[in-house]
Length: 93
Image (tube, rainbow, N blue to C red; front, side, top):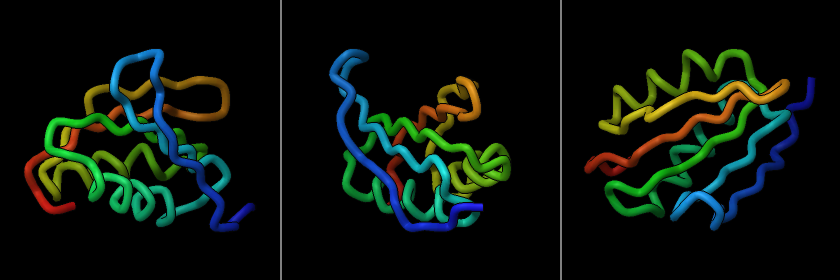
């Protein structure tokens, strides 16, 4: 199990204006905490793509979004990872 605090955030110019957050290898609660931090820097309506290999993310990310007014637009399994596309709501987080 890799609990290092490494993550990568960047822009995906191939699919519009999407901010990409790669948290592969991080375990609960780090994927949600990193997503929360990334969403703070985005404007309402912006999209954050979170790439995670944490099996708990399938529960934690939708729960976090529901609690803080964000929307999970879609989830795409790709190999060992799942790509979560989150639309920032009007909340602070």
